Amino acid sequence: MTSQAAAAGPARGLLLAAFVAALFIATGMFQSWTLALLIVNMALISSIMALGVNIQWGYAGLFSVGTMGFVALGGLSVVLVSSAPAPGGWSAGGTGIVLGLAMGAATIAAAVMAASKMAPGRRRTVIVAAILIIGFFLFRAVFDPAVQAVEANNPATHGNLGGLGLPVLLAWPVGGLLAAAAAWAIGKAALGLRSDYLAIATLGIAEIILAVLKNEDWMARGVKNVISLPRPVPYEVDLQRTQGFVDWALSWGFDPVTASSIVVRLMYTGLFAVVLLALIALSQAALHSPWGRMMRAIRDNEVSAEAMGKDVTRRHLQVFILGSAVIGIAGAMMTTLDGQLTPGSYSPLRFTFLVWVMVIVGGSGNNWGSVLGGFLIWWLWVMVEPIGNWLMVVITSGMADGWLKGHLINSAAHMRLLTMGVILLLVLRFAPKGLLPER
Image (cartoon, one colour):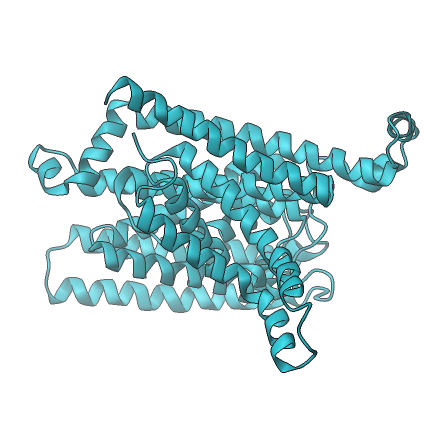
């Protein structure tokens, strides 16, 4: 690479970052700083999701479309760790649920151990099947009555076990651990498959995770949602009741209500930015280490890497777990920002397709490209619809009222998907390596 080409990379990145920053500043100036900061916070979380996908795809070429499932597991961790225990939940059937889950895990472990210790043949098949069948019925005999008792415990407000009542910031690394554990289980089963089979497997397992969240009320109230989760920052109303804060806001000429909203969002921005910068620092160090160079060698030519003695499947499992853990952390952060867990809001469009667009547009293999793509695509996702609505009103202002005018104005609701598709096509056509290509 020539010196001019080497210098062009950082300069291009700075120009693109300045352009994206200008979009957010313009949003604050022409609409509201509260909205701009809300978009910034979700963009930070989306960038972390994109970073996790980039670790899997950009480092190792693993095509996983199970992002939604790992995000949901991160959100579940906030409920399990930080929400208060449900009154009467554990006494109703908590012990039975824990015992049933332990029996289910023991059954699977016993079946795996029997399959690994015994020689292949009919005898092994019969014994493993017997272990699974007997274990299944024992599991259901203990687990089902306990679940029914817990879900019958004041279902209007609880009907679940609740959480441990710990500080919510502890839920973020726990979300990463939950996602990593799920990735380990998925990887052990699916990473030996072809890349297209891996994509199908991860998509199916993500849907299974979401189905469990929606239907197992004892765990997180299912579709009834868990609200009023603890926050790592003060509530706006608490700041508004603090005389010192009110005096400070008035001294700067701010309305206390608006000032409290901005200050709380800035606190979230600081927390999320610290996590993002820490993850980028670790990701960059890993990328430029011997391990990172090995992963890229495996990505570029698995056959050659395997011929040189590298355990490709094991390395794929490592990077799959790492990327999933990062996504799980982002899922816990998002649920913390929302203050509630709503399983019905998780969709492949938002938490899989859109994150992949961020990675592709930003530049796969480039960590800073994932961050740039996360900020740019999320801003567009939020702002394109109101901009499109305004544009349609301007275009149709001279038209007579009728079916065509109404149809054009109503079509603004579809501008998000149209814009994402157009941007993806343009990037794949004119910048196939992304706005910030891997170097």
